[in-house]
Each structure stands twice: as structure tokens, then as C-alpha cells.
Length: 148
Image (cartoon, rainbow, N blue to C red):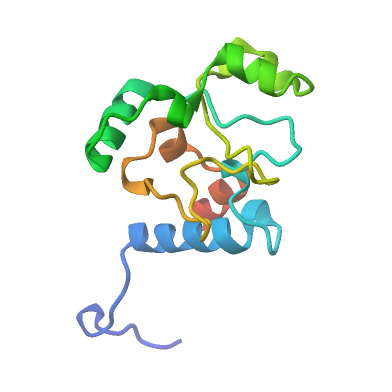
């Protein structure tokens, strides 16, 4: 058995730093445990899935408006029930009023990413993101985080 080393001589990351790095790596390179997948929770693709319900839409809009230096209208980042059910009539989850408001997907992109997801697959508002996004961890991430 090797003796332990003095921790003041070795840079040991805090658990929170390890968790943040693990989340970033998994979400960008191993999403849901699938090698090569990225940010599935931020894209719809062809799944019966919606990014919502957003639990703090007004507070998030206030933070986003402050960040952008202008009033951000609700419809720029959210979809409400009537619009959503009409946009995706063949997706049962979008017919359920309980999942609204949802984050607006970029309808011009076949992956249907959240409009706030950057081309680099990083959230452009990560530090002020809605509560629903901040507390969401897929089962794969939950298992990885428990292991640390």
C-alpha cells in the first residue's frame, strides 16, 4: 500500500468541479450514455418530447431581458399550449397542456434544438437558464454523479 500524499502539494479538484466536468463531457460527447450523442435534452428531433414545462418563465424572461438589454417577448423563447399543439399535431406530448410552456425549438434546424442552444452545443444562457433546465439530469448523469 502506498502512503497518502500531502494534499496541499497536489491540486485536487473539488467535487463540484468534477461533477461540472463530468456533466459537460457526458452532455457533449456521451449523452444518455451513447457515444457521439450530444445534448439530447435540448433537442427534439423526431421524438415525442418537449423541453418543459418551464416552471419559472417570467423570472427567466426577466433575467434574459436584463442580459440582452432589451425586453425579450415570451414568444421568442417559449411556446404555449395552443401554438405547440398546432405545430406538432402528431406528437402526443405536445397535446398535453401540462407540459407548457416549453422552450421554443429552432424550427429551421432538423434536430429542432432549443433556440438558446449555440452551434457549439453549449447553452448560451447556461448561467441564467430556467429552473427546469438547471435541475434536469438524465438517468445516465444521475448514475455518473452518484459514482463520484
